[in-house]
Each structure stands twice: as C-alpha cells, then as structure tokens.
Length: 442
Image (cartoon, rainbow, N blue to C red; front, side, top):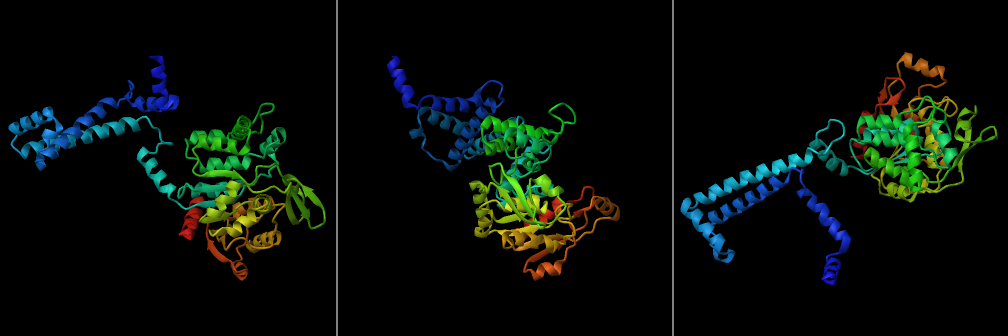
C-alpha cells in the first residue's frame, strides 16, 4: 500500500505539485468570503446554459442523461417554451452577475492600493504605464530624481542609470565603512519612482540628527547597505529596495565597482575625489574614473532598446559626465536608435560651472567625450524671481543663460520652454518637463 502511495506521489509531480494545488485550494479556506459566491456563480451558469438549451430547443437531453431529461421535461411542463428558457436565462444571468460582483468585491477588499487611490485606478495605471515608452535617464543628484518623479506618470518602462562617485555625507561614510558604491543618489531615484505609501517614502528619506554613529545617515541609505549585506551584491540589494518601494521601472548603478572620480585641472593639478573636485577653485580640463570600470550589461541593454534617452539635469561634471565617462556608455549611446536629449541645468554651480551659459555646458561635454552624444537640448527660458536669484548669488551661483542661437549653430535641435519652478531650492517643474519629453517622443 505504501509503495503504491509513493508511486502515485511521484506520478503527480511530488511536493511542488501538491504545494501548487494547496495554494489554489486556499480560495476554499474558511474566512475567505468567496466560497458561497463561487457556488452561486456555478448555479447561475447552469441555469443560464439550460435556458439557452430550452430557447434553442436543442433536443439533446437523451445524450445528457436520464436526470437531465426529466428536468427538461419538468421545466417544459411548468413553463411553456420559450418562456421557460427566457426565465432560466434571465435568472441565471442575474445570479451570475451578482455572484461575480461579490467575488470581486471580496477579493479587492483585501488588496490595499497606495495611498487613497481606488484599486480600479491602480489596475488602469499599471496596464497603461506598462505600454509606455522605454525611457533611460542618465545622471545623478537631485536633478535626475526630479525628472523621474514626472516621467513615472507616463511609463513604467523607465531605467535610471545613476552615478556612483559620491563621497560626501552619509553615502561617503557607508562607502568607506562597507566598501560599497555610494547609495545616496540611488536612494533618491528609488523614492522618486516609488508608488508606495507616502509614509514609506518619508521613512526612506528620514535622516538621523543625533546618536553616535547614526547622526547624518538617512534610513534609506542604511537599508540599502543592509540589503547589499544580505544579498552580497550591490545590484541585488537595490532590487530588494525597489520591491519594498514598489518602484515603477528600475534603478541601476552605472557600474557595480567602487570608483573614484579624478579631475585634471587647467592649472595642471590632479584632484581625486568628488568632494575635493567640487571644493577646488579651478576649471576642470579632463575627467576620468579610477579604475576604468565598465557599464553594467543591464544598463547597456536598456540604452540599446530605449525609445527616449535623457541626459541630465544634474551637476555637469560630478553627476552627468561622471556617468558618461564609464567605459562602454558612450558606445551604447551611439548604437541606440532612440531619441537623445540633454536637459540643461537651471543654475551654475560653484566649483564646476561658474559663468557657464547653456552652450558652455554642451562644449564641456563635447570636449570631454570628443563628440555630442545627443540630438536635442532642452533649456529653460523662465528667469528666477529677484529674491530667489539673490539667495543663489550669495552662494556664488547664477542663472544659466539660454543662448539659443549659439546652440543652433552647434547643429542641435533646441527646445526652449519656461520650465522653472519659482520656489527654493530651484528645480525644474517635473510635470511640465515630463509632458514636454513625452511629446518629443511621440
């Protein structure tokens, strides 16, 4: 007997098959609130089918069986055909609709949508966004996270390729202590693409302001570091964080290696480290990373398949060019058939782009890479309010002048729009920017 049981167990597929069957049968567990409605739906389907048989006068009851034949004759005596068929058809349809409604209501009542969004909206957006364009956004810092916040309303096929050269603050400390790429810019991009509860987003961005060892760290950076420790892989750790935040799209580091940004200055000095480069008062002549790390294969594939590739906004040298100098990225851009657009910064930055106009940003990219890897440039034409501009000038920053004619002489397709959000700190209006980029794709 036991031998027969073992043979049967092996024949039906063993433990995995039984586990699948058990999961399917959970719908019938007590407390699920769907069994009665599934049974009612079955009854409705039977009545509806029998009504159709009576209406069409399909005299196949002999083939069905004796019990079915007697039921057919009984209903025919009670209600002269076609009234019996019509009654059964209507009753069956009504019962079936009621049962399906109750099953759906019972299932959806236990599914929680992000925030207060109705579950119907969630389903609609998931279907709509999954058919959206394939978008790649390249850069780092707050500029990249700002643009992602707007783009996620148009597509869930977004890949953010993020610089990993940050050495300051919480990211720099974790980078040194745990020998991992810095998680800060990646954390900001994850939160921007998240569709989880707002409280979860705030929790990820929470920064400790006291406590020995904790002060200055953001909880999101610590969680990503912990996930890297659990998985043993930086890329897998980011994926775990993405799952927690229900990210629309994905966030990838430009490289999985721990790299250092190196700048050759115009005065001949070599400066290593992003923070030191930013604080060095001098023009950057050439930028590189040590070691010369390669682009992630997943990032290369995303660029190759992209419909729209966005470079910037962000710090010209320490975010944008720090990503573009990764080995293989420029070649991937050249092979891609997608539209490529550079979003110019709103303001100059102390230590990087003092006195730069929009065209100077493009010239710096061309000087570094030997070519301009995009066809479009998007510039802001709205001037900051005087009180806001004054605050920035106190920090040795100024408005980036959109010298449109010079950009056109560089054979670029210029898109000039008022995209400034008149609040401190100055940012692009992410909704306007996203609409403009999607219209460019279309």
